[in-house]
Length: 159
Image 1 (cartoon, rainbow, N blue to C red):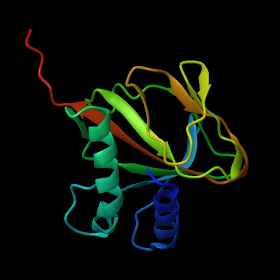
Image 2: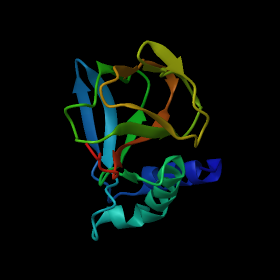
Image 3: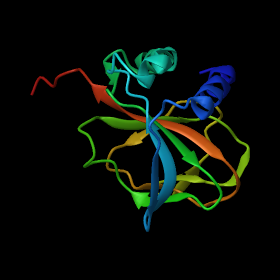
């Protein structure tokens, strides 16, 4: 995905007073989150279909049998925010977890999957298994924006 679209999403979401942000401040996670579900035909979500359509195209490029989940979350990590090690297995029945980093103007906030730090470029689609332990380390400076969703495999097994 082109960087300009990542920047456009950040600008749109941070000035959209109609979004229903959730603030998590718990021992295992501290961040802001808003759902940009594309299945909604009403409310603020319809203003983000342009971005969802870009994600759908990227997912199909991975594999024509892949589909994006019905949900998409924009995550915002400010200074002191984090998400401790966890898996996505119990949260939604899907084949893969996926996302994009939308910016690099922050320090800390490493994305660690199965003990390995990954460094996806802005707008680069990354995926990992739903059972893979992953985390976001504490942000020490700036604000980290990312988008997360799941990928379903529509191909049915013959066995």
